[in-house]
Amino acid sequence: KMVWERRRTIEDGFEYFVHSVTNQVSWNDPSKNMEENDASDEYVWVPHEIHLWQVAKVEKRDMGGNVHVLLDSGKSLCIPPNRVLQSTLTKGKKQKVPLWPVSKSNLRFLADDLVMLDHVNEAVIIRNLAKRYEQDEIYTWVGAGKRVLVSINPFKDLGNDSTKDIWLHRNKTPN
Image (cartoon, rainbow, N blue to C red; front, side):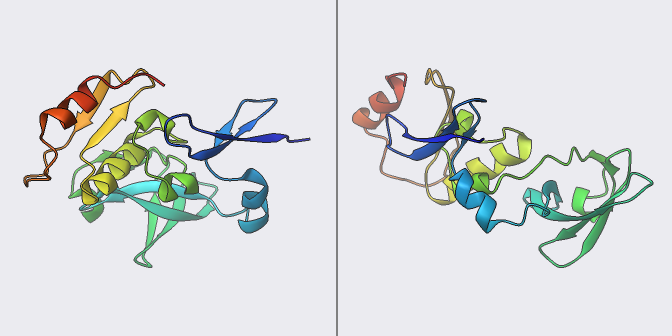
């Protein structure tokens, strides 16, 4: 039987869930996820011509190893068995398509620390940084030790370049 414990992060008080046997962590209540979501739906990351990656619904996996996906635009796309795509989505270049799984919690939750993401891959990291950037959140941590800080130049004054703000990020205490 699956036993999930409800917990909160120390710093921000965000709610998360930990499986008491496997130590699996989820930002979403797993009992609600099982009830709300159709378990047969599978979503993956595929290339996007502007945003680099986009979410696509897997329609089928055929006997030849092709993966047929449906994009948000309504267009279908066939990923070949070698997982290398060359199309307008890749700007004509050959691109490896790993078909990383999409966690719905990664789409709902923006992490101020990239290790807090459910699945860590290039698509999730780029999306998280881009969405935070859109909200003028230009600083994102990497790791519980708060030793690596990703900073994206906003090319505008955000009013947070005071000595206090600099020391806030420079001397961040570990979790």
